[in-house]
Length: 315
Image (cartoon, one colour):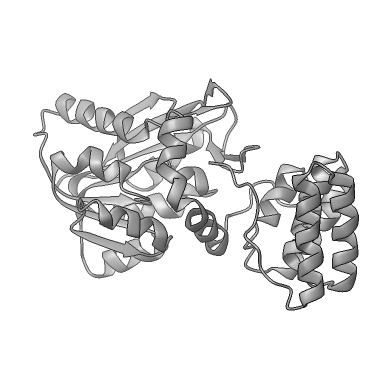
């Protein structure tokens, strides 16, 4: 799911806010040049109006004005330290600044709060999303190969969203816990009645708290979650610390032919195979399954990815 723009954040100036909305009206009618002109006037009137700077960057980008877009996105970044709008990601996409900057909590929360209502329809209806089914098949395959029973104890669904992954795994687990950064996503998941516990929290913070409380899980799953994480080492290491002996970490990622993390034009991260394998080994986990898998389509074409299952050491 690519981000299509920021939610409106007022400048505090009624006139500037009105000009911003007029600019969006121009853009909606296809008058991008007019929209850019009005936005340029808007930021002159309210120079600390981060939302207008971000919109100006987006319009200039659509007009092919790369330098102008970079200048506007740079202003939005500098004025919005939480990067609520994702200006740092847009700058990276345009080849300016850090190549693969971390997504801030404010940005990710805003993104998924914004899309919670249409999330499932978009994924399953338009993007042929099949991450949970692919992940479950990989886990079952790995367990059969190890001669382990198909029934597991407790499962942690990282970035549970609306509960698509939880629904796929619920028949296999005795207890299901979900965590997500967006309250609107948690509300959707709660309505399904699948989870024994749901928590709104950032993933690494939640995993640290679970580890401190000596909570552990027989399976930790992350379906289409790590595409929003640039550095997987901390979160995979944190997940490993909450695994029970012989526990399983299972996740999907998008991938690319190089190494490390790469920011895609979709504003999601792809992770190279070599770095994935090294990160799993560094967390003290053993690979059980590492396969190619496309969990969604984009513009009618399958998106290359991996499905990964790794286990913690036995007692």
